[in-house]
Image (cartoon, rainbow, N blue to C red):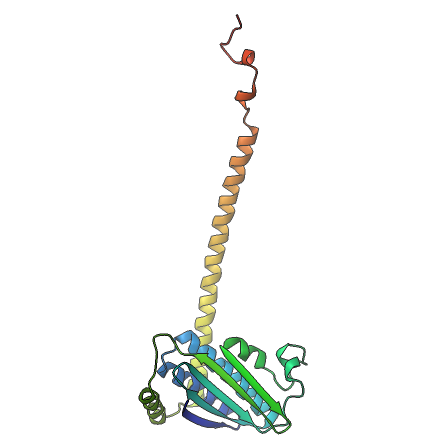
Length: 218
């Protein structure tokens, strides 16, 4: 496993920077836009938890030939009942806030918490078409060192654009679902009419022969 970069997360600005760097690394590793957003959102949630309840933390970005992993450490008092947090049984707004959502967004998730600090590992499998070699990972690390961090305002604007794009996609999906439901209702309605008509039509094959028009018994 090769370390790509590391950064401190002392405050809100550090959270924004962690989100920005996660997105940049994910893009360089070949993740599509949706996975970039998932990774950035998960890292942002865990980083915010570190700032709010541990006074800050540190993020380390690593990769191997299969997985991109972000490790976030803090030196806080730890989470009293990690399993309760992950099960959703902990009080909302307490230590561990955001961990459940972050876990759902990741392929792998691990947490270790003691009275001396918490370590969270967030992993996402690399895209199938990406198989970075050692030199390729080193090149990505060099590219990250060259990229100057954008201002927090730029990252917030980027996040807002992603949210608006996601909202648009959800609205489009809702419109498609509404159209499918309409077609389904029309199909069901036609089927019901056909069924009712077939039941109300007299069954001439069941009539006695002498009741048929033009038939006379000799």
